[in-house]
Length: 64
Image (cartoon, rainbow, N blue to C red; front, side, top):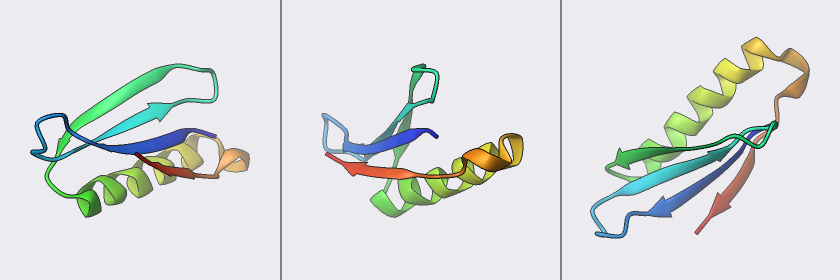
């Protein structure tokens, strides 16, 4: 299960999504214009991951 955290960009010009995979690998997707855009991306990414690992579909939401 991956953990997703939505953060406000330092320049206040949008949102980023920080991802921590089950194996501890960290990634950041940058440049979402709205929080809703970031949330929609998370849902799509989680669905794709569920396809790859059907037994591991859970999402942890974390806002900062």
